[in-house]
Image (tube, rainbow, N blue to C red; front, side, top):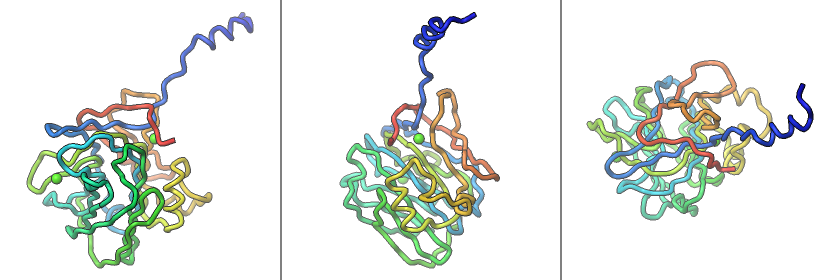
Length: 252
Ligand SMILES: [Ca+2]
Ligand SMILES: [Ca+2]
């Protein structure tokens, strides 16, 4: 029978399992590391959507770091997000091969964690938020034409090429995909509160969350990141490519 003293000794001797809270991508000019969504329903990509990223870019390659690239059938930028590698304050968005730029007072390359969200409603309103502050609003009539495959996070495909580039070294703490344009007030809240999925409990809104990759696990051997959105439906996984490691580093 265990004595109380014996149990205390056992508890003091057992190490808590490390908890990994983010993914580290390690890239250089010779080869980049990235995450690829195995397959994504194109209906999640073409209507109203919000992409959200919490990330920390620590080291650059010779290219501007790419957060997201959704290619069309020719591997052109159907939807893509790049950060200017010189200032860290200009963000270039590609949408249906159209190029937009946004400016932010925040330097996204200052060695800190940041959040970035891109939301598009069904009425042609596209907004970009950085750390909870809106830095672009644009009305458009463009239509996306994604294939649902070869979607990269942390790099891009150049047209006609099979080698990904525009990588960077740093951490991803969380990525989310919604099939609705989150309201500006919601995006402001999310910029400061990664720990909450919604500002107020909202089961209707949560049904629009179709991809949730938090990179929180005790299992460092995983070579895919499972989707863990709370509702039912498809579970697109992120496949790790290159030098990718689980780390205990997190935003919070
Ligand atoms: Ca490129
Ligand atoms: Ca995380």
